[in-house]
Amino acid sequence: PLPQERGGGAVHVELANAVDWGGLVQAMASVEVQEVQGWAVARLAVPHQPASTSRRYALHCEGALVCFVDDLTRPLAGDMFRTGRMRNPVDLSPGRVHVVYVPLRFKVRTQFRVTVEEVNLAAGGATRVYPPEFQPDLLALGVRSGPSHPEAALTAFFLPEEAAVAIPVLNLGREWVAVDVV
Image (cartoon, rainbow, N blue to C red; front, top):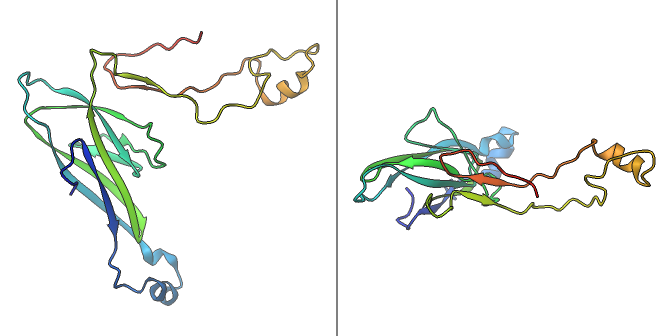
């Protein structure tokens, strides 16, 4: 189970140290003997609040490919590579115990963390814009390629007529968000 922390907790899963993993791999002639599949299941109690309507939360499953809350038919994106940018908007009812499911597939040991934070929709906390991880090293980005441009051959090879840069935007709200480039 997740430790009783405010907002979430980290879990370290490791198979028994008494097992001679090297010997098993040699005996089976395969490293697949170390592979484990299973589920981590935890209860998430949402405190009762005066306004008993459901509230919006951001669920972050770090170190997991996917996770579920209450419903195994609605997968939520995990943050497998621990970027810190993958959040899922979920509506949780106050005064109710919700169940978080995290499917695991690993060799001998793994770690994952589930974090839940309330989203303040009124204060504009539903939209987050992150800077790109890697800045493109192309000075001609966005320049139309043409025979008169000195870098025309380079831009025509690497870029289409109109290029774009991906800017990570996270919308945790209930409405669509239009993002304009200035």
